[in-house]
Image 1 (cartoon, helix red, strand yellow):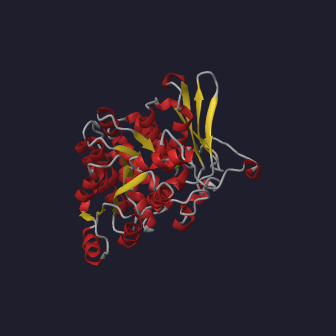
Image 2: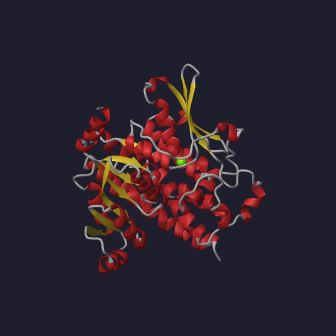
Image 3: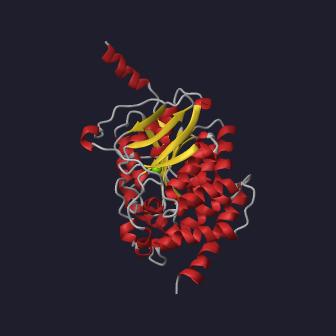
Length: 400
Ligand code: MG
């Protein structure tokens, strides 16, 4: 009897509609993997990509979304001319925004890379779409605007980031007043044990070799400089609405404890798991519920030891810049973000050295005029200005 009821329940249950911004990136691919086992729960509305149309073709055939959107115009025409996909095909940033705001969306998973995530995410929020946010640069650059818009539109902002998912899982059922601090864990990246004087010689290949997590190249470099952890501090500041003095970073090389929350009575809660992004992704998709998955399970007896230490801000100045930018306030975090994006791209192209990334951010933070962060135009302007500044800085001071 119960089984029949369950089957009828499933039949009658309305599927939730999801759009994935950035479906061919690392998070996008893993989200589709999760959705594959949740096919009774979700209907995919749109998949959006920058220009990876080969993978988009495969995904469109497999998941049969209502439509796709392609940011790059050349890629859009190429796709349109050759595809067997029969649904809607949208083009450019406008197409991405249309997909994000699509009427039937219940949830938009934003896995775009860098600042490009800001405007589509903001538009989705204004159309009252709940957001699963994997694109942390959105909160870094425009945290005040995004969180205010989410509040005004009664929209849920659910972090896909493993650390913030861990914090969320630890504070469910707790009152905000009882939180003393949150402690974001960091693996320390591939250069945790590298001596400072070796940093001038670090190569792209070494920096892309993250010890625990498999991720896209931008975030992997951000992890090597610890800029990623700095961004996560900013992300936590906006998501959990806690003072900066209540957010700590702890080095934990095994990436098993994904973060901790300390309460006013001295109690500490943590969330643990294998470093597999599909777990925080699925939590964001099904929050506040959990669904059964057959992902590999954590076996602490096999892991044996968990280690912890304080972060080294001399070796990893980028983490300090994140705190500094929040203390400065206004558009300062968006300066850090834009300078970092330009510098990481230059490093990946082997135009600058690993240590130059921090130098670019520091000089942008000193040179760009900080403005109020109360409107998106000001943030977009600051972002543009910082990119031009950083490009020039690299040309004049860092390359021959
Ligand atoms: Mg993270």
